[in-house]
Length: 273
Length: 358
Image 1 (cartoon, chains in turn orange, yellow):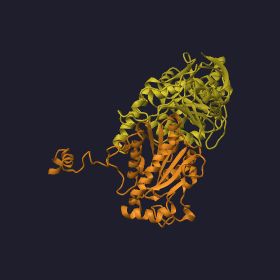
Image 2 (image 1 turned 120 degrees about the vertical axis):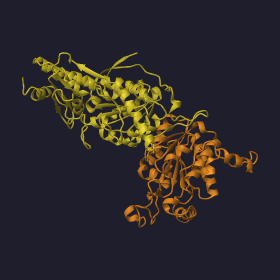
Image 3 (image 1 turned 90 degrees about the vertical axis):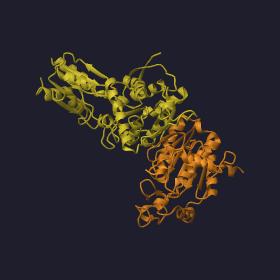
Image 4 (image 1 turned 135 degrees about the vertical axis):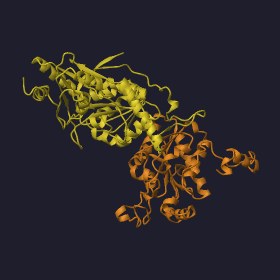
């Protein structure tokens, strides 16, 4: 056992407190109340942690921690409930929007959101996604699109780009035999039940701010009982894309965004202006 | 105030759901149980504000049940065999997450798309698991329209008592046929006590967040969950067995049967007594927990047992395990939607247990 591990648990915290320039007077950034003090299991550079933090910030800012219920998917974000300090339900693969529907229908005064990846939302759960949006369920769907199955180790997703390599498209996605990527966000924007549909990213600070605004709007519209709000976040997967975090952000910008362009697909506020 | 009505089994069940103070029903049409969704769509919302939602599939409806049951509301769904097959994954999740809810299977003939006629071919699926993993449903098997109605309230009681999904296993004939039924008075829709301990209802500042999940990656934790579930099932076995013993006291032979078939067998037993053969009927009302001791005890006093089902022989395995070789257990079944007559059951009884007609 070395000397460091023998030190008191509070040692480092005390050192930081004593030597830090951070004081309550100049503190500008801290863990939101709705984000639990649990180390994230996500890989370095992954966008999930950023989106989790955004949700926590928005819930704090709206003061709705007591009234918010989240639904976690099957996929990398399956443990979202370990990080978000709100009541949460884990859903079977693809069924998060049906689970969210069940919750919202019996607790219509609460804020309900589902958090889903591309395989969950746009492959196995396509039926639930389309019909939840078509019924205009008054809830928020947050859709993380990184074009790959992360948790199972890098298989082709419904949103994998044409030519993009994965463990199940080792020579690149051949759209002739594997189908073209499904732009499900474009699809749900066509449905009368959706009220606000937008595609954002978190690969740069400016984009993080825009995504936060979009998620904030999603909750606000839910309060006004407007129907389904759908926020896609084009994200990365450094581990399964086999890139460094920086390379993955460059790939996202150069390859993903031309195919999945950022911006609102349906924004009633714009129309009204 | 109790009320007497002539109703179809499916409608009696739907009416009973409203009167039991059920909060929500999620379902998808399938013959022979669509009347449940139809009746509720017509009646429920105006009367109690109960949520009724026609889902896009049975897969969606069972997951809506999962979500809504996680809030501690009284939630239910109903379907028939192929639709219930689609629900199995969700039922496994519900059982593991220990969510109280009521499920109904108006059993039709299979396998495959099968027939819309009555069957008991889903006994194994209902009682032995159906979905993946070690779990149990509490299974109530009605034999009358009256029980179709009564088991709704009783099912919710059991579901909340044990935080376990309860299945009413009916069949296409019980769902479609009309009988008189005495309906219970309207119960208020109430918020169940103790929800803050487990339900996803919104986290007050002063409590930890509640999480509903069936995922426990660490094997020791997952084993702990399994041990807990098995302990609960043993408690249910100790406390909740329901069984009807019909003319068993002086019986020389026993017929075992559940649901609608038990009524037909009761008639067959009467025909046997007319011929001087003392036959009794044991009708398990709960299929899980199964009346093992009742059957074992009866087996010690008789010469033989005939098990009758509308399938290829499913409950007979549990009857044989209960009897444990003490006396012969024979089986007679019809499949594919055929309902046996009392006369053919008597004939089968005589052939299999008496070596021919008496």
